[in-house]
Every structure is written in structure tokens, then in C-alpha cells.
Amino acid sequence: MTGAAAWGPLRIPIYRSLWIAALISNTGTWMHDVAAAWLMTGIAPTPLFVSLMQTATSLPMFLLALPAGALADMLDRRRLLLATFAAIIVVVAALGVMTLSGLATAWVLLAMTFLVAIGLGLARPALDALTPEVVGPGHLPQAVSMDAVGLNVGRAAGGALGGVLIATLGPGAVFLANAASNLPYLDVLRRWKRPASASALPPESLGGAVKAGLRYVRHAPALRAVLIRMAAVLFAACALWSLFPLVARGEMKLGSVSFGLLVGSFGLGALAGALVLPAVRTRLSPNVMLASASLLLAGVLLSLAYVRTYALVAVAMAVAGVGWLAMLSSLNTALQSSVPSWVRARASALSGLAFMGGMTAGSMLWGILATAKGVSFALAAAAGAAVAGLFLGLRYPLPRKAMNLAPSMHWPAPILVGEGGPEGPVEVVVEYRITPARFGEFRVALRQLESVRRRDGAIEWTVELDPADASHCVETFRFDSWTEHLRQHERITAEDRALEDHVRSFHVSTVPPVVTHRTPDRPRS
Image 1 (tube, rainbow, N blue to C red):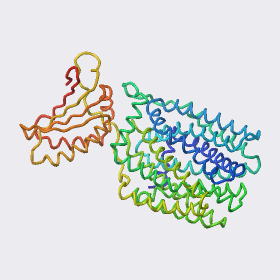
Image 2 (cartoon, helix red, strand yellow; image 1 turned 120 degrees about the vertical axis):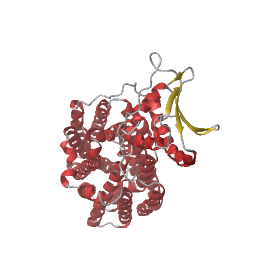
Image 3 (cartoon, helix red, strand yellow; image 1 turned 30 degrees about the vertical axis):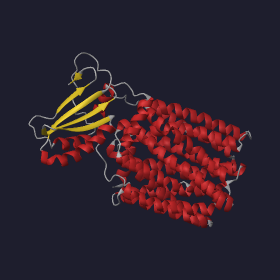
Image 4 (cartoon, rainbow, N blue to C red; image 1 turned 30 degrees about the horizontal axis):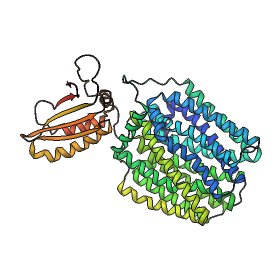
């Protein structure tokens, strides 16, 4: 991949505007994180309170992930983001004022961090779903890398600027600067004329949308593999952010500027990784990329357990940036390439759930372990956990190729008698004529199609043979309502159609398989 292709998404105006706004916001966020970590180690320098900062950041995003994803798929994502970013600005500005006034105790800092994390938890699925929406599948891998570039440029700049501003103006001024850094995002969202949804169906209820998201992941092996691998990697890797402030300030006795520069070196390493990642991606599979990133992070954690020389720690943090970027890029590209648009925000929310679940559990465990056994012991244990997590790749490999998940829309609309749709559950019955000798092959293909039916809304699925006619096979799948079945018409993708065509290739009659619709009160066909 050429350098021009790697930067190609920036040629799309709305993506470019959102990316620049995100870069400014990310810079402010990392300034804020450096200031918050510095403030907490000053007012409550214990392993438990420092690690609780990570918990306060992770727990709300863990608890809100799936409802937030459902809302982002149900509502106008632009309006949702406008509301959440406005709320975040208010909370962060309030924290800045309280810090400058001397009112920011350890518990106040934890509480305000928790509130900010609630806003970010509501915004994150919508933000993640925007990238595939505005760039399309052709630019998606490059856009995922570009998002990582923006994040890590912000991390590098924010870490360095945060350290300087803490030393000159104090943490309170940094919090106010973070509040201001989110204003460009609000402006871009306000001016963006996002296309309206093309669906003629009513929006899902919140409960129904959450249920649909859980049902989807249950019947989508590729998505499940991404989520499991993400939780496992973050469980170990989060020790870097949970315990690094204790290494830097508690054991290395660094000042705020030196601490910020180390955070910045992580961002610079990630930026360097982003520049070479497109070329590396063409040579390595997603699974090899993720395994390599995990080994890099394990090596960094082990080195931080024992190395206290500033230059060597800076190198280790830069290597950590490369590994962190490769890890997240591999996982996020696999995620976005394996889910269709109708459930994308919920899938992103579930990835956030796995991400923050791993971060929450890991940060609490490593904090407790550091309190009981020491920081070095906890970091070494986290390195061991990172290596052990590699074995999950044998059971849960990432998908090897992108799938064509564009809506197929090839099912004809059912012809109804009268107006409106029927009430109550709906059964769809498909009748096949199969050569009995090939039934075993047909059954394997049909079982794959079962996952698609259930993933797209079917609550029951059966296949039956006619005892009086060995060639007659009937597939039946059931929906809660007529509207849910019509949603299935919109959810069928080109990838699903290819599987459906494969199943129908076993059909030997000159007439296509007969499809009928049945309801408890009257049949539909």
C-alpha cells in the first residue's frame, strides 16, 4: 500500500473535519489524563486509589456499552453525539473550576472522572460507527489506522503539553483546556448534514435493540472471536496504564514534565507504528499481527517491572505504543469488517464492553496485587497473562478476510391480503426438493444459514423431512412480529445472499423453493 493510499480517507471532507476535531479532542483528553493521574498521585499516592482512577474510567463504559450501542443504532447519531459532548464539556469544566478552587479531593476526582466516563460511554459506540459510515468499505482499513494516528498524535502531544501545563499552571488549568478542546467537535457535528435513514420501518425499542445486539453476537462467530480476544489482551495490557504512574512518580521520582514526556513517547511510538502499519498489514495476517503486538506489550510490561533508567523506560514506552497500536488496529479492523451497518454501533458497544471489561477487571486485579506484592510483581504477572492469552488464538482466530456486508435487498416484499401487516408471531416456511444422496451436504450448508436467520431476528429455527417423500425438506423460522420479519428483509447482506445461493444450489426442482408466510390468525403467502 502506498503512502497516498494510507492517507486516502482524509480526502473525504466530512471524515477530514471529524478527524481534525477528534485530534484536538484527543490531545485535550490526554492532557486531562496526565493531569488527573498527577493530581491523584499527589493527593492520594496509594496503589489502590491510583488504580481506582482506571476503574472509574472503565466501569461506566462497561456498564453502559450495550444500551449506548442500541441508542446509537436507534437514534440519529449526530444528535446523540451533540448531547453527550456538551455534557462532557460541562463536567470537565466543573472539575477544572473545583481544582483551581482547592475543592478537588481524591473522591471528588474519582466522582468527576466517573461522570466523564458516563458521557464517553454513551458517545463511544456512535463515534466508532461513524467511521465506516462516512468512508465506506473501500477505505475502512486505512481509516481505522488514521483514527489510531489521530489518537496517538493526540496522546503524544497531550502527554507532553499536559506535563508542561501542570508544571506552569497546575492541573485545574489542564482540565479547563480539555473542556475547550471538545468545542471543535461540537461545531463539526452541528454543521454536518447527515443523511437520514432509508428504512421505512419504525425504530426498534431500546429493549428490543439490546436483545437484537445480544442475539447477533450469539450467532456471529467472527464477532465473538474479536470480543474474546479483545477482553483477554486488555486484561493484561491495562497494567501499563494502571501502574505506570506509580513507577514514574513513586519509584523513579519524576517531575510532571518528565512524566508527560514518557506518556508522549508512547504516543510517538504509536504514531511511528501507524506510518508503517499499512505495509505490514499486507504481509501479516490479522492473527499474526495481534500475536506480535501481544508479545511486544508483554516485553514492555516485564521491562517496566525492573528497569528504572529514564532513557530505557522511554524506549520501552515507545515500543509499547507500537504494540498498542498494532493490537487495537488489528482488533478494530476485524470488528468493523465483520458486522453490517444495522448493528454496527451495537457491535462497537460490545467491543467497548469487552475492552472496558478487560480493563476494569485487570486494573482492579493489578492494583490489588501491587498493594499486596509490590508494583514489580504485578507488572511481571501481567506480562505472563499477556503471553498466556496468545493461546486463545487457537480457539478464537480473527476473521482472515473482509466480508461483503452491503445490504442485498434481494428478497421480494411479501404480498398481503388487505392493508397493514398481520399481528402476532410470523413463521417463514421454505420448501426444498433435495436429492436424498446429497442431504448430508445440504444439511451442513443449511446449518450455516440457520446462524444467519437467528442473527437477523429469528427466534426459532427448525428443519423437517417429509417421511412420505425423501426429497422434500422444509425449513421454518419464526419471528416475534411482522415488523421484525420485515427488518430481516433489510438486514440480509451480499455475504448472506451468497450462502443462501449455495443452499439453494442443492434444490433440484425446475421451480424455485416455495416460500410461504404463516401467522396464528391467517396464512400469508
